[in-house]
Length: 444
Image (cartoon, rainbow, N blue to C red; front, side):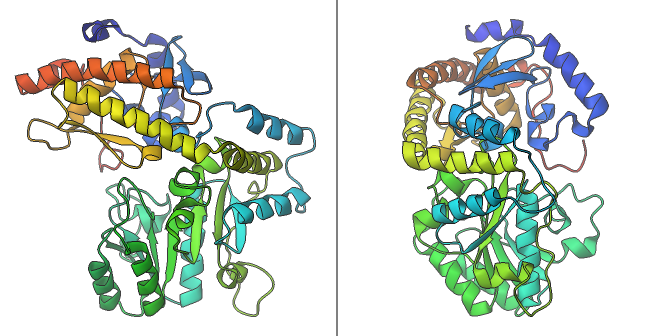
């Protein structure tokens, strides 16, 4: 499909399905990042099914998919070893009035994979796990404030975090005021914050790494700051878990947090997350201590057997098949190809690939090299029409070299149109309607 053929690309069944979704579900999706406002107007495909690195929409179009399941399906859709592990449990019952032995086995497997932790508790989503870490830190320190990294986009749907975003409606101001921020990579600014609120900050919460590598000594410096000021160091490893190493960023960089949270890749699309950490902290949510009890995590579905079986299978596949290394190899090939394609079309300073090879994102910059939602819209339209579904360039292990080569070809076509828009000084003729929108905004 040429760059001009995109005007004939239509998704009528997806459009009807989106209307049906909006009539029944607030936002038309169960995660704001999956909303149709994140895609060009009338070009938000509704998925029928997926296999490996490909998905099909209800209009019958096939796409090479990136960012699968918002980074959760890192092995590819319907991975046989994972689905087989799940099937083995389905006929044995999924939830009981008492713990199953599988819970102990899953915990042992997780702690062997993440040896920096001493205890683990499973849940179904990342928000619950991270909020439990915050509650535990507050209980352990007796302090009210939470310090979060201002440069990281999301930690939880709960009030302590959402109250700091433009979508703070419904959150009491007093709750949001208890959350303060620090910049990533700046130890001096973080120490200044801890000194300003001396004795008030219960924990430092951050992703240990994101689109940039941590500066040398930064994570170790945070560890020392937390110890010096008596607060709990919490690593949100929802993204870095497995993609940086099987043991997450803490396993790669050798800095041990007090608590850490895992999810996304842990279940390859099945709902499972984990709160892990030091025994002395974690046991406060248990029964074998003399202090005040902490209501840590208590979820009816947190120990569903099929999800825990999926998590164990994922960890086995990662270690036996070297998945993390494969993600990096695929990502390096993709990043190089996209950069070459963008440079070849004269937009190398405007279509910019960033991040660790296993977790690539892209920026779309305007004539002045500022982030632009209009240029992102133009770019996404051309990718979709070329059969590439890519809100990011986050790879899965199911991708092939042929998939990446096809992606690069489509990117090159998109960059040719991008160059036209830059030369015209206006991307509007190529956006096809309203631009895509940021997730966090005050008005719909």
